[in-house]
Amino acid sequence: MIKRRFNFQVSTLIMLFLVVSIGTTACSKDDVTIQEEIVQEEEEEVVVVEPNDFPRLTDTEDRFYTNNIPNSETTLQLSGIHSAADSNLLNQEIENRSNAGGGIIKITGGTYYLLDVKLRSNVHLKFDADVIIQPDLSGNTLNKNLIIFDIGNEFLVENSALTNTQQNSVDANTWFTVLIPTGDYRGVRVAEYSYAHNFQVSGIKIEDTHSVFSSIVLNLPDSNSKDEISNNGIIKDIVATNGHVGYGIIQIQAGITILCKNLDGEGGSTMRVETGVSTINMDNQLTVDDVVGRNITGRFGDGVLTFSPHRVDQGRVDVENITSINSTYAVRLAAGFLDNSGTLDNIGTFSNLSYVGNINVTGGNGAQIKSKDYPFFNCVDRQAIVDSPWNPDEESKPGKSIGVIRDNSSEASACEAGCYEVNVENINLTNDDFENGADYIINSLKINC
Image (cartoon, rainbow, N blue to C red; front, side, top):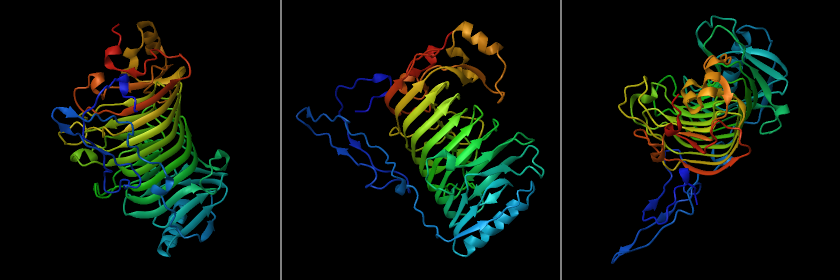
């Protein structure tokens, strides 16, 4: 049975429990167990139904991505010159290969400078383990948001892959590297998926410098159409370091039937399911549903997993096997709220069928502490954090882990608006090195200094 947050004890339930798979591209009846228990009431007698078999989203990779790309392969030799030349050359090869029906483009060892590389349908980019990619900063990048690989911003991209040469290898020694240097720009996205169907990105080591974007972003395309949302994709086998407190490896603003797997991030929030972009907040039409996470790790960051709906009532998220090491929290469950973007008069939620399970938490120093979390520290420790220097992201300070789940979305947390219930199961603390150490950190635990 699912352990509800705060260990609510439910002795009897009288309910109609009907779960169906939702979303136009969500999992089928074969993928998600459909249960139907019918309450029968006759002469004041009822049938009591216990939810022993909570319906979960399945994580079989074949449900998310099918390799339909032709197996013909060509090796492209890039120059390694810090200019737009290699980006232009790769873009032309991608277009030629896509127009010819598709295939694999392999990049061999070297350091290359790329920017605005537009992946197209039926093309697979493979990078050898000794490849290092950096963003091309040779042009005017002042105050700009940079994207190295652009998938679907301007047109639909079907059947694409961006991987290491030994695709699907979990050995990090086979993965290629992306370096994000400091520079006169706002932030760098390694890859942005906007209108992509059936895709995979995997096998990457990312060395960040507290850039103000998540490395992989799923968002709406330039058309801003919610009918053009990425679906059926896998993001897996990625490790990242030096993350900004507000970002991490992946942020999902718009994505349906997405699998995130084997992600290991240092700093920030490894997996953010947060939908605050203004173009999404114009009407209450969901952009996130059937999102599955497996083996998500975060170290010395804010929260390994973040739920945060802005204005829009979103669908289901199912995450299992979370490892938090010296981070402020393992999980953040934020209630919906009216932010400064968009015009929709709605708070926003996630489906109450969402799930988070098998949370393994190690507390300690070195977490990225935001100012809004200072009140959970005792007065002496709080003053020490206030007096300490900023972290390199200039938005957090180093401190001790607070607890397991920061929750203001549930009824038990005294949520008043934008409330939803996530089914939480199996919390395991490996030590007691926490400022508070409670499974659930709620507003009533704040300390008045």
